[in-house]
Image 1 (tube, rainbow, N blue to C red):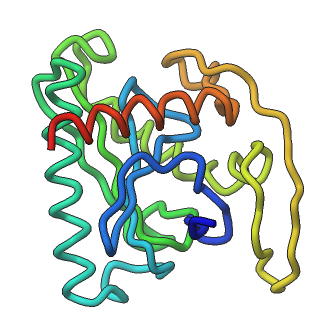
Image 2 (image 1 turned 90 degrees about the vertical axis):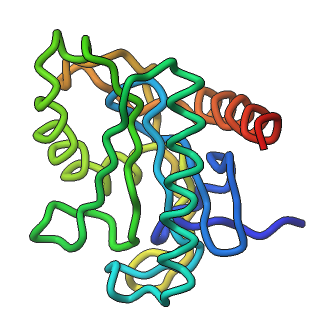
Length: 186
């Protein structure tokens, strides 16, 4: 049986599309744009400063590899790479994670800086979105096991108020597609 991959206390094993010895790439529950993924260290730590140098190196080499691949896959002109490091910076899940978003000059009708408040808002609701999704919670903060699952609606693009968490089935399909793509280009 393969090991479980955690995003803090959430089992994201089915969302994983890329692995290294120290990092994983997962598809996003509520992507802001097509191709919006998260890269995180396998070891659950809340802050960038908590990572060992080998984990930092692997994390950002993975960000670089995945970013390059997503740019090609989505015929993007650029990337937004973002890491909120700590609660005051907008981080809502206590596990280091880097957002990668393939970008085009036409995103948000050419108002590309709109991505930053959207990322902040996305991050602020992430814990609740994960809790209400179909993603199993492995360990609650009090240490008890919990298998609560919620209902996730179909994803629709950007008006933020219309963005809904995707179903596990949608995320599994995307993860498999990305996994095949990255195996092919490496």
